[in-house]
Image (cartoon, rainbow, N blue to C red; front, top):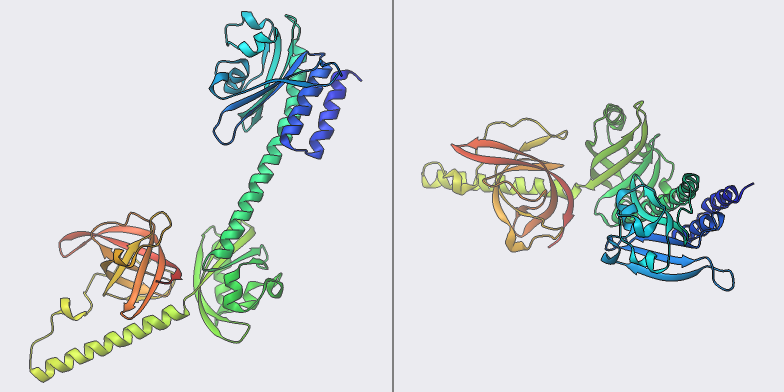
Length: 434
């Protein structure tokens, strides 16, 4: 077995072990340089922080036969050098006589007396994130076969480094998603393709009283049934298989302590090419208090209307001015967008925009005309379209006001009494406190 073959076997074995990326890149450069009897080697990496190119040049010939770093450069000083040229071009370069090559100017290499070179980029998805090089103090020292060998060596190392970086990124994203799942003010359940619960969040435990060990591998419909759960389960599953996502519905949930809660559910699915479900994400918002509050508001408003009518009858006056009395303003029916029942709710309420993830101040709320409302969402009319896709709505009458965050799902241009306005439809997300 030749020295090049031995080097490829060695770097392949080290790549399988998956050491630290910097260590693996250094080992690959050393193995390539030893196999080709090179005088120097280099390892270059692009900084993930500022995008600068850092190059470490080392010699193979110190007194003890060990590699020894000669110099390190970073920043704009590398912009016209050989390695920068390779990284920018994303292709290997074979140099026969460095001082005579007009493609680049590399004082660092020339200062060391280097003349021949092979520099190969480390690629991931056709983008260079570093480079390895081997160098000789003699002209015309390397052949095309030598360049191919170095390229194969770098390929082994780059594949392992890219895999390691991807795994680290996925682990970080998974951690971030899990943290978000635990802090979001909604029930979040991850299900497998057979609708069995695999993961839950803290809110789910607080609302239902069940811990993850209580729920794991149990079918969600058997744990949280609605009154018509069999029919709803079939509908949700069929719509997800047909590619609709998310699918929403509202139903009752019986907690571990036998309390009945009203939950607005939304199901999103990952579907394979053949139409089979791979995984499902179920989110649920407890709208029990919201429904109760809306019913109370409706009762109070009805009582107010009755009182106004009685006063009119007693005083013998004409009909009250609807603009001041709070009576509903008649609007044409809109296209049905919601899967849950909604009812007309033509009253003034207050809304404010969430900007850069920050909840608005109480003084930032503006009054708008509501159009309709349901346990899962509402719509309102505005002269100016909201700039943010997340709002906070204040529902109810002081001092009994509930603040709820809402996601804007559609904005439609309409005409009301000769004025061009925007009809804004929203879905409730979670309750907030002021």
